[in-house]
Length: 242
Image (tube, rainbow, N blue to C red; front, side, top):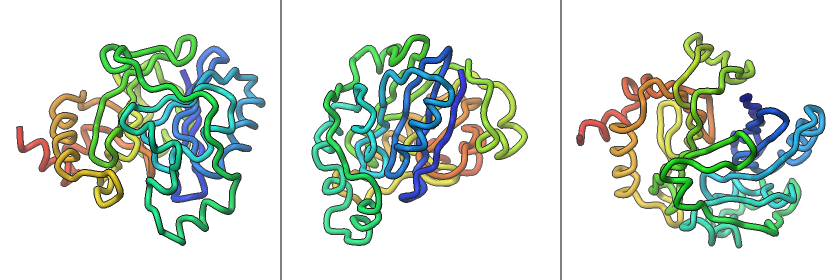
């Protein structure tokens, strides 16, 4: 299993191409990544099976409809795909202008919501690529962390170069979306966000997630969960709640 990160030009959002044995899944394709993703898939001779979203904010789903594959999102965030910019931060002219520089939003032809199995034990989004979802509402109603077992041992320099520990193997790799970043957490002042739910989600994750997990967030560098448990002030506070 390998991961190719592609940084979107709008808000520095992290898009990831997850691939194994020529089968691929794209996670969170933000604005301005279509050509890069398609070029990489073509160069590697990959078959793209699905787009999977951690949540429905515009900077994470803007390009989802440009790949002609099913797009998966949590049920609570499904409505956001009908108007991702309006439901992210309506009335923000600067944000609107940033997205306008790239290919226009295209509603995906086939939108599927995560099955119960995705949350319970994981579901295959491509042959050999099984992701398990954890509901982490707060940043949005349907914010989701996506986990894959530690088969991922070949990370590119953009990820593995963060610091020496990231070059080792991990029991778990987690795409944390905008729930948790290196040293921070997602905003709760946007439409549909909820600070109380954010703290509840943080409390659950802080006490349930394997400390040895590798986190690949929606913005910024990769991080080790044990490092966040020790240094991230929001995670530390949530964990102290028991």
